[in-house]
Length: 464
Image (tube, rainbow, N blue to C red):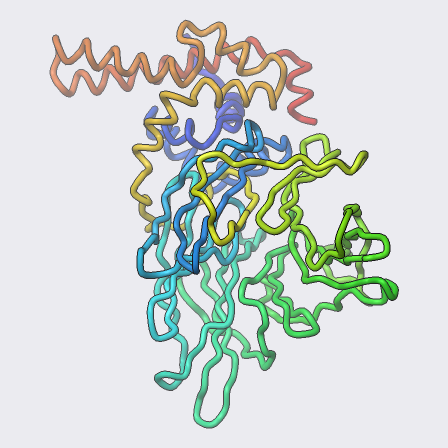
């Protein structure tokens, strides 16, 4: 049988979820190198965003400033079903907080002592995390206070940057030192000091910049050029307007405006011109949420649109619900398997990705267990979901033609069968060679069958 075209193999691999790709790394050295490459991780993420598949809701359950656990739910499936994730920095005596997320990476901050912080980057889907080296803040002993942090991405260099701001006292004056950690260089670097008083800790990442609220204004940091700028906040929306804090939704910066006559919340989008801030404010109203009953004191946090865009997922207080723009109806989401009565839950929407937290990253302790459980219980569901999202007759038809129903079960069953037969008659080396050969043959057979089943209409739909 002739080998499959490399471009076709890559195209099919890009359709698969992270769990399946992590298992298929064992097929060969070439497959492992391709799946682990930065280009493949970027293309896999971009395809998920374009096809609106594999979007996840991460739930950070906190109680009295002590993080208990992380959970995730899937927008592609039943959003109410939640699954436990492992917190790599979990401690019964110290608090772990999320200070930002970007492209499937999460910035975790854990409080140690004497105003010191431990930083870590964590990908909950690959189960890898990386503890960052300590930030070398320069100050007199005992005169340091953590003021804020954030995570951003530089697309031009494919680099992730962590920003830390500390209020320090040197001699007879206070200043705010700003340090930036580059994942590419694996080092901290001090940039310009700032004199502003910080009122928000978590930097909001949107459109290549991190934003912090600073009393009556907002300060932004261009992640690429590492230069601060002042952001003009929304104003002059009428006498009934109550302005609320800025937020990030769908990768963009928004400013909600609460109106009590009538009861509604208007969400204004920050407008940018070719990636640059628009002079004079640059805010445009995008959508409105109608409210009933008492006067509102805070604006619901928008989390995600549905695929059709006709409803939106909102978080108001400790409730999460779908809001229908046409009839203003609300449908509450009752999450399953969450511990009862936490102080509050933090919600983060992200895309499942293969983005690495660094070359010297480690597993969070549950990687192998989670992979095995997913392969036994979720492999068929994963491939069916991919086939439904990508095309009507794509991977699902291919999985029906396979003798074992899908690509993942076929590879797994053949590997087990071969290893059992070889262990009776052959040496340990022969068993390993035969298992790897059979696994490669099965994947090539499945990929070729998949390419034959794909119609021209399917490929046009994928390109759209």
